[in-house]
View 1 (tube, rainbow, N blue to C red):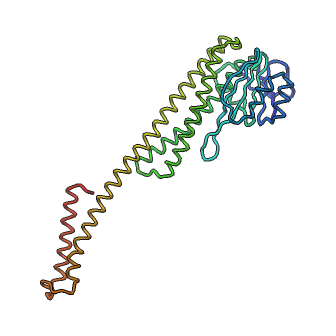
View 2 (view 1 turned 90 degrees about the vertical axis):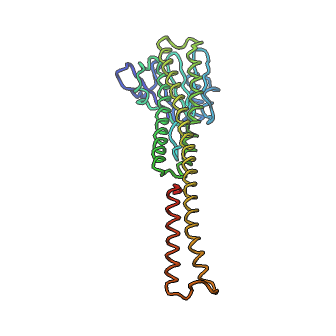
View 3 (view 1 turned 180 degrees about the vertical axis):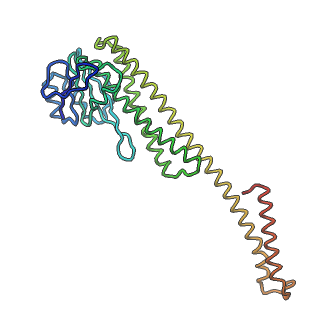
Amino acid sequence: MLAYYAKRSQGEEFETLRDPIKKGMWVDVSAATKDETKKLAADYELNASIVSDVHDASELPRVEYDGKTAYIFMRLPKLGKSSRVVTAPLLCVVTPHLLYTISADETLPPDSIGINSLPITTDQPQMLALGVLAACITRYEDLIQHTAESIHTTASRLRSHEITNGDFIHFVTVEANLSDDKMNLNGTLAVAQRLRENSREIFSDKDLEALDDIILHIQQLLVSIERHTNSVESIRNAYGTVANNTLNKRMKTLTVFTVMITLPNVFFGMYGMNLVLPYMNESWAFGAVVSSSLVIVAVLYIVAKRMRIF
């Protein structure tokens, strides 16, 4: 889907244009087909070989230059099925007068770019490109926060021993999400640092200051990912320790109960044999055997309690 946007000042919203203009415009192509990207490259004299890489689902973040045009690849995340984070390549093409965003999947909506504090207008495609980069990083931040809430919920359940095997299966997804986020953010950080070098003098000093803030934001998210990864590992280790301790206590309890049940059976078994036994003909013999069994069970219970077996 091809769309044209314009934003003349910071205070106004992005305006959807019916027809393209030569300067001060943002060209956005979502769910782009190969034919659409070829036509776009031909119409606006873009590098068709680089633009076609947007259809490579495994394309990693990188930046390439063609004269005064910068081709910035990033991976745009979203929450997929079963809480799995999926990413797709997003190409941001920065020219002196226009900005292009191209993706074979979805692109960023204009309202998500306008919410950051950058002074964004379509008359400054370089700053607008940084706004797209910042909005992409904000997507990662939102998903990392979603993951953190999931970890916190599981940790709270651990305190009440209500954690289930399903939670540990969910942890596999959580760790995979954190790993993918870390990989893509590291790649995006490398791209931002290369843009910061400004070897082609595409960005102004004001743009570079904004880029410094973006780099710092990415680094903070990477630290957050590391902390959440450690939290998952700590929860797993803690629950393993709790499970082992609980199992040991249950085994001790079962052992005591087994002894308590076994000893009375010794007396009942003896008086159940077809042999001549003491007091077998006495009327009180059955009551004595039962009473003795109950006394033995009570003594074993008291001893086990004092020994804190259960």
